[in-house]
Length: 434
Image 1 (cartoon, rainbow, N blue to C red):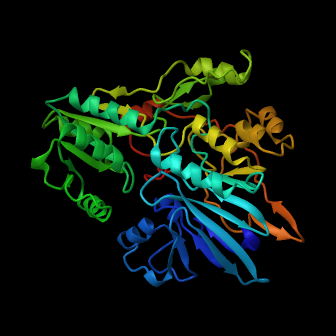
Image 2: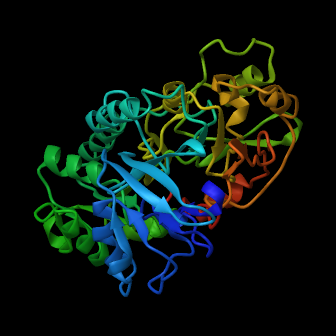
Image 3: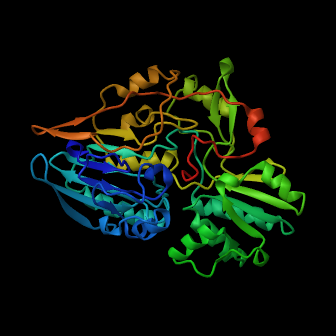
């Protein structure tokens, strides 16, 4: 960010101001209870939850950013600079925010992780706030984007639709216990909807119950297994092996609500591209019928965006706290960036966001065409959260340090291994991602 003095979800020393978008572990890596570098800016709810994640954290270092409220901050080095920042609801998990920065360096938006569904009331309010904040500028200079699902194969439904799909699965198994794999934070709305419609309590593990109470949910959740047949369990413990063991004692169905892919489908030349039971075809006529994208689409097939029974005891439901491809596209059209940078640099089906979205940027310097020409190039890199020296002021000019375009990341995968090991989350993907 500005002169390397601002960091977002990045915790190396050297910055003056640090911002936390939300408390998922892939965004807090490097942050600890002994943090002492500088003040940390976050939303009120994130500040409320920090002591439960970092018990000895010095709370005097927390600075609260009320969503939808502009703040003016000062940077002192190398020369005094004024920074304007507005936090905007990211609708990802409790406390999650986007950060809009403005100053001499221009206008920079960091989305953190976000899910802006078209008919979501909270997302509609967030869009209104963002439009108002950008009304006197042509668009965002640099967009740091949650590109988790920036591949057009991802077309999962709104969360309220996926929640009804989960409820339908539960209702259709009245004699079964139900376990649902969730993260340490997130999916609360899903569980609340299940409780409301079915008029039942939801079991959660003790640590999760404390989090629920901090979030204000005091009557819906319990740690008493005798009070309910529906249990929300840590995602890392959700597997076929667990379900098979439970079914040896009592009929049990597992439900994994996630936009993450669970299979990979074979393509030509014996390569494997990440597919998913949760995806549907990309049918918007943007590519010719004979293009590589169209051929991949045909091979992926009409998978649809509905629940799939991926094992005799397990269902996968496309409930995601990240925006799907179409929602990302609409978001980019709204903010009109000059350039964009994905905050996710590695995933099971990674595409550099400029590949599909570069055409929507206000300045197109042939990067999109270059990416398309290198579509088959394989490149792997570790997942990183961005902060540090991404945008700097230099005599009135704005410089953007651009990473290498990696095109589509295609990797080999053993379906047999996945079959035997079940739906355990791989180490590469943080259990808090989705």
